[in-house]
Image (cartoon, rainbow, N blue to C red; front, side, top):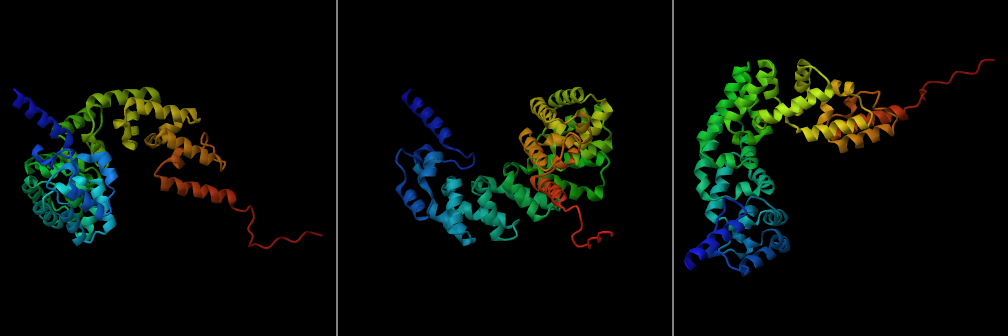
Length: 377
């Protein structure tokens, strides 16, 4: 009985300590005392050990650890000491990866990365994607070969590996099924086969996690939208918005959102479809989020008709809308009578529009170059 209880406690202690699902260490390798060799090695690398103690102290108790080996691998690829320290602070689990596993990962990633410098940049942003156990290497290699057969360029494949590593750790058949579902939907909706590679490449680069969604979800969502009156060409437009959002939705949520939007905007089903094509965000924002955004716009004096003309303004948070309206007012732009287009876009887009208003206000009323007319006698 005592042995059973001890084993159970050991199991749950391991579960609590293991932050990353792909670097596992048995209980026998850890204790309540920090590994002095690890501490010394991290100190010599100028790593902020207090940060690791605060967030992932369990790593410091593990033995063996390969701190110097991880640092040497990164430096051999051109990483500076500062970059090495930043990577180990962000993902200290890296020091638990065996040297042969690190080397195997390096060779694997360099098959799709243009250079070691590019690989270091990826590791700096996505260290958990690189430092992984050797048990995943076979699936990773098979998935790389599969995506190469689709003629995806190397940068796209490396981006997929970095941002959605789970899709490369699972059997290639699962990715193959989802890709085939996407391709079939694209062609069935009237997409051009000659453009399919570019479409797929953009879709995967914008939303790598689309590969992790069940194919049935996409089929159900497309069928739901078709039943709501969207034509094949319109569905192709939605599918080609480069985010793969159709796989992120579900019919229940879309039903609530569309019903709320229709009632709030006071429009017909046909008008609502036209609005969705302009602003697909209406499909995937929840009712509470949309309610807050409508309330924010209306409280600022914006009319429903203005929102109908520029529905993409609903993609902006209420805070951003109020901030931009205040800046525009400071230069005499009345949002209640002007176009909402000036509110749209990224921060850079808005600053450009705002800059034009500044120039318009500051422009002199006369041409300083033109000669003044002489006073008449």
